[in-house]
Image (cartoon, rainbow over all chains, first blue to last red; front, side, top):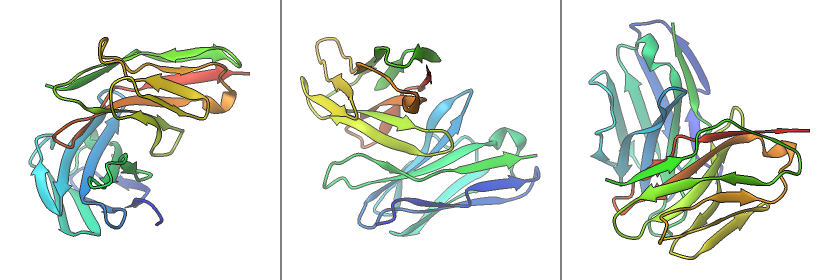
Length: 114
Length: 111
């Protein structure tokens, strides 16, 4: 397996624009997590899914943020409208609960909102 | 609730020095504990893990022991290299299947 794949790796957008980040988890993993990393706040869990169903979105900062997982092999994190304070690195991770191994992270998407 | 506390960084060491990065946790039940490493421009990678009390995780010369009595999981390496320069995250895998991460400790090793 190629691991967790995120796209794009880098995104620069203007304030007010819609941004969509994408994630392809490892095949067979039943949990998917979205994290945000900033210098000020460190690594924050935004939302996680189990079998494509959102379980806990308490970390989503505002209604401008939304996440979906339409099937087991794809998830999106959308920010609409984007603001400069959303600039961060966004990571997706997936986990196989049945094997109880560690969570595997993607390379991240570095988002810059200007 | 569950939480992880890591020592503040950055930590700057000379090559071949001994490394300790402290990590303590608060948790109900019996969580698994992890150390992840993040190299510049990359995602997090698992460095080592321990799934029960007194377990020792080890990898690439790094070690950490799951100490339930002191609720700690300190990371150690006997002789660091320049290539170990990275950010290290302590993490707790909780019963609700959420990973809780510490704030990260940046390590810089000088030649």
